[in-house]
Length: 132
Image (cartoon, rainbow, N blue to C red; front, side):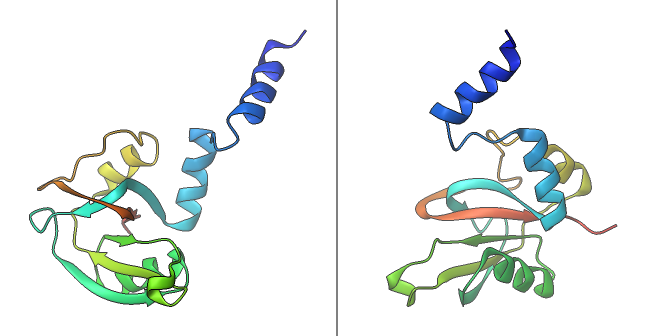
């Protein structure tokens, strides 16, 4: 009897959205961004924003934020409201290497460093990996 194998199979069966934190951290570092908040976006005190408009993918929104020199972005899911696309804001949040390294491992209760999170169920917020 292999309890670890049984436990993994049980979690996969009954919690299909369960993600290994270590595997997610590796994936985030490969992508260059990590999810830091679901269901809202940062207040202006946390970081000024820029409306990037409609995008097709999370990667496209990340690219727009990075090109603007911003360290984070918020994005919706695909929506008929946006013509089947997603809506993207670049967010000028403070994201340091130290915060990034913490956030890719610890996903729960990430604070909006200099402000607050504003509730909006349509948006999720991602931080871009700081470049050295």
